[in-house]
Image (tube, rainbow over all chains, first blue to last red; front, side):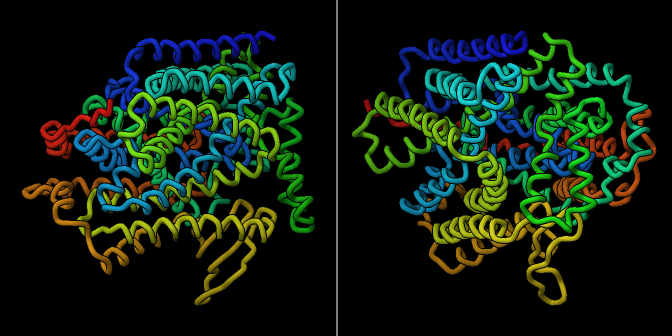
Length: 543
Length: 79
């Protein structure tokens, strides 16, 4: 009960922050204030909030769960590659998006694309693809909230009520506070994440009697592979460096780049971003691996057993039997289990609040979808003059309510696995949309037709991978199931964790083909007018 | 020349992410419990931070900030 009380206290604080942001903005019913906090965020809030926006529930729960079953490779796959690629994209793309937003008054990336490539409906196609790829995050956030509140309260709060509480809390502070409220809440949440990692390591390490014995014990066990990367193909590892390209293409991140007061805010953000990743991911990954030694926790022991059975006997099983074992081996709750076993009750509550903070990172996606729908559809087609500033803000708020209610309704009815998979594809989809931003910002010769064909390719590829994985069941861990061979190579294969194209994850061909299509189609189609190109690439600029 | 060196530094760090030489070994355990492969990537994150510091210092796109300040256009009010 104590952990649940602390989590509810945390939720109350979060709502208060949203209401405080609303009171600060009172009288300013302006679009830029609600959707972009008047482009006025300072360096600390900008760094913490941008980082927190990127840290979904996966950063804490998913990373430790992935590390539990796959080992230390999780850090190299997802954290250190992001620590290089995301700051680079913010440095090169984020700063330019900010400057163009300042110069031309953009609020969404689609507004930039429409202006840059002199198009209207093609912008709507880009909006539609972005919105469809983003929606599963909102749904999974509500689901994660329901599950976490249920676990932290020891089952006292049922799933449906937990989901409703989280949906209501997120809706409230996004509704009232807009971007300012969301950024402040994200800053508060990020500080909690950062505290979470170090406190969790100390408490669990203490409880386990130190990590030296655990590490040596793991090395001497059949699970020693978890401390190396011997089971991970190097091509697969390399493919993961393409995934962080998705960060800057996510509309909520692109939109967030417009909120900085000065461009100098980006400097501190890109420098400290990799260190923030280190501070959160390293403890979570390490604890996830070490959890394999916590065999006195029955649920953890059952997960290790399920994984071993799957590896040893999976080949002889039916796909359904393998799926049952995979679900048993799923370890997203492993940190919660460690905390329940080793942390005192009050601390488990504080750490539960930290986990809630991660789960609730869905706020930025809700606000981004609301911003996009209001600006890219209603205002674009209805006319800015017809609605006026106040009406646009009200439409944005109404959309926040509608979207949250829709996400909650879906979360109650649909199985979580569908949306977990959708997110898996969405990362690749957004990574493959990143060439649009690069082309718009750096290449005079890019055209709307190039943008359209790239976007259609992304939509096609995401659907194709989803259909392929639905049609061909995942094999047992080990060699992939080769479906097609070309030039003596495995062209298309189904792996235990997804799909491989010539040994790479689908994200690699998706990004490369998207970039190639942008190049080829743009070269064959007419450029925007000279006046537009001059606005974006003023004569005399050297870079 | 300076720009070429910076590009080289970015490419080198990207390549160094693929640390195949530590693929199959856990030892030495740094501090007695951190596998060498994990320690390498923790150091990699610190190196990424240093690289970003270098880029900010040597290649900050101040010209676009100046353009933004010069051409800043408030969003047209409609009421």
